Length: 147
Image 1 (spheres, one colour):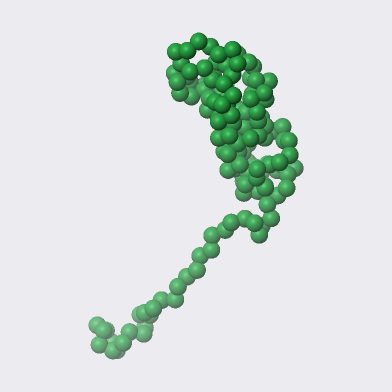
Image 2 (tube, helix red, strand yellow; image 1 turned 120 degrees about the vertical axis):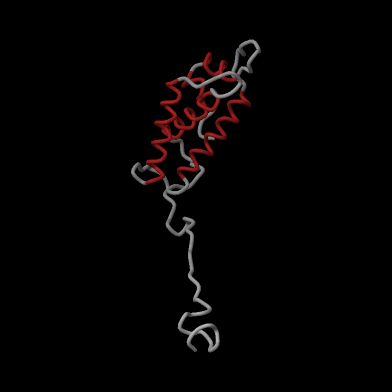
């Protein structure tokens, strides 16, 4: 995971993380539910990797603050969905900014100081054409045309 429960609390505050992990209809938790936050962070990290793996070795092993931030923002947005919760406009905007940034990395317009994937490691599709079995000029005599 690119972020942690502690990162989330530090970035968004204890009250916010408690609110986002308290199931509806229950009293507000005094501490965020670490299992709920960890699941959201695992999923957010997978999303980050899906954009990065085209250009960089994933998972990223170095501590990159911008990757930590991106995963935290994506996880917070996901935590704000469901159970009678909706993300705020700020969460929606931050998520859109992160996705735009990730697309820039994927497309090569934003570069990170990370180990790049060598071109031999990239998966590429290969297409091969088949030679036609029957050419129009090579029809056997008596097959509906001039033979």
